[in-house]
Structure formats: structure tokens, C-alpha cells
Length: 497
Image: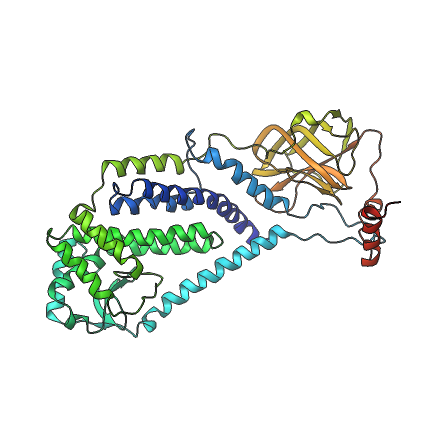
């Protein structure tokens, strides 16, 4: 495995696992916000989304019997198994030159490349947008108006946002915003100082400084990185969109906490004045503005009138919900799912098949690894296409922390339910499958979440020799030209005699 695969495969597997949990968290947060709509302050609504961020960031969580991971572990394991299952099922050397062999396609590797390409494209977009931001705003010009500087200094002292120093500038933009992680700037629309009153400037400064006090720019950049990793998940994107909306409500609430009660209505008028006559703002990566979404203005005005100066407090209901969400969604399952369930009950394998096991020359195990097959049962007393089988045995895994233990067929094809994730150590396993094409059955180790196999135990019915690879290729139609393949399919499925 090359160096890139060594680095990317664990990240790819972590993204697949965390994106399943993220979908559950998004649905849960939306449900809680709907159920407790009138009892959650804007700050609490925003803090609920921190559970989503942590769920996507944390690679490990303590076990908890009440964790949602206990319910979604089956789904997560099934997804990982499905992605692992679409790797090439042939793990054998090339057959003799006389028999043309169709080369299997590594769809799992192709999906990893597609995912990596999506991440790269979004990352390039973020970097280019951040570098071109000053040019897209027409450049920054320092504001020297004494009235604006005095109001800005007073708001800084009131909110205690004094470090790092914030530059007060203006540019060709429709709405005020704050940008810059290391050297923040509060940017006003051009000629806004002349058209806004002292109170209106104060309202804008308090809101934009609230973004800096709450570290919204840093959180926004983290969200951009997570969106790059989970670009394929629309629920993650929708969750971050709702998070940005709730961020503006929380900043409104923090700004209102520095105002008297009678100022709340005037603050709402300031928002309306900024939106009236302005163009639709463009959301910029690495920036936060006071009026990013016109359609949310009505809800923000309603929040202002409902919560006034109390909107930034944490209520008892909000604290309880945050603790419950952390306990349920930021903890892990108590036990790892050992195998993927299948649709055929064990009672439907009536025939016990006596087998012999062997290893091919290319299928040696790594030191400390082994797979022992103890029992094979099936819906037929022999191995044949169209039947289902159950394989039980013991494994020992020492070379990896975890791996996929899979039931496959060399040169053949098996149905679903053939994979399961196992941890390092010793244990028992059960694998079931349906034989779709003739082949040599074996149980194998595969790296998690994907890669080349590293050890196989082959088996066949005792006293019945395995077919050669030439015979399997002929049986499965490998090496036939299109006319021969079509004739074979016609004779198999349509010729009645």
C-alpha cells in the first residue's frame, strides 16, 4: 500500500462512520428545536449545534449504554461492509495465459478517489476565496471619522473585545461584516458612516463584535473544513446552514444584552434599514455579517421582540437538553458489532457439510493471524450456485487493530451478508452468503476500511476436488467474446430444450 493510502484510508473510514452519526444528530437537533421552540433561547439553539461539530471531529468517545451509537452501530458497520464488499473479490494470481481473465475493478478505490477529488475541489474554493477576498471587496480603506471611531471604541470596551486589535474599515459591500482570523477587520459599506446615526452605528458594532467575542470566524472555518470532508452528505450541509442562521440569532441576543429594554425595537429598525434597498449579500468563507439572509429577517425581528435582553442566558431547559445530547450523541457503543446480520435464519441451513481446508500459495497469513473454520452448513449438502451457506469459525488478529473478516469466492460471486468488522484479539465469527457464480470459497482478512487482503482460509467439500481456474473461467463465461457470451446466456435462460 502506498504512502497516500496509508494516510487517507483511516480518514476515509472515519468520515464514513461519523457521517452516519451526523445525520442522526442533525435530525435530533431539528426535532428538539421544534419541540421546545418557545423555551429555548437563541444562545441555546446555537449551542445545540456544537454537538454536531464535536460528533464530526471526535475520533473516539467513551462507551455508554444509552448512547445512540448502540442503535446506529449496525447501520454504520453495514455501510463499511458494503464499501468493503465492492472491492475486487478475486485475490488470486493470474490464471494460465491460455485463459483470458477479466480484470476486476476496484470500485472502493474509485470511490475514495471521487471523495478525495471532492474534498480537494472544495478546499481549493475555500483557499481561493479567502485570498481573493480583499480584491472582491474593492480593497479596504481605513475609517478616520471621529464619531465612528469613538462609538467603535466605546463598544469595544463594553464588549471587552480588545485583543487582537480590530481595524475599522469600509469597502464596496452591501452589508457590514467582520473578516480575518489573525487580523480581524470590521468592514462597513462605503459611505455608511455618513448615512447612519450614532445609535445605528452602535447596533452594528455590537453585533459584529459579538461575532469576534464568540469566535464565530474560527468555528466557521472549522465548518468549512468539515463540509469539505462531508461534501457528499446533504444533511451535514443543511445542518451547517441552520447553524449559521442560529449564529446570527445568538449574536443579536448578545448585542441586545448590552442595550436597555427600549432599544430592542430600534435595533430591529436598524436591521430593516440595512436590508432595505440593498442587494442580496454573497456569503463569504471566513466572514460573518449582520444581514447574510434577507429571508430570515422576519424571524430575527420576532426573536428580538420575544427575548429582548434575556435571549443570551442559558435556561435550565437548555442546560438539560445539552447534557442529554452530549450523553447520547457524543458517546460510543458499549460493544462492537461483530457481524452483519442476514435475512436467512440459522434454522434454514439444514445440511451439515463436511469440509477440508487449505491455503493457496499466495494466501499466507501475517505473523500472529489465523482463521479456523469449524462448521459449514447450507441449504444444499454440496456447494453449488443458487444455494446459501453459513460458515462458523474462530479468528486471531494481531497485525491490525481492526479488519474486515469476509467470506468471498475466488473467480466467483457471492451475495450480501459476507462481511463483518472484527477487533484485534481472538474470537468467534459467523458469516453467511449466497453463491451467485461458481468459485472457490474462502474466509479472508481485509484492511479496514479497504485494501488488499492479507490471509485466506479456503475450503471445499471433503472428497470433492476443487475445479481448476480454467474450468471456473469457462463455467462463468470469462474469456468469451460478446457473441459467445450472448449465446451462453440465451441457452441458459431462454432455450427450453
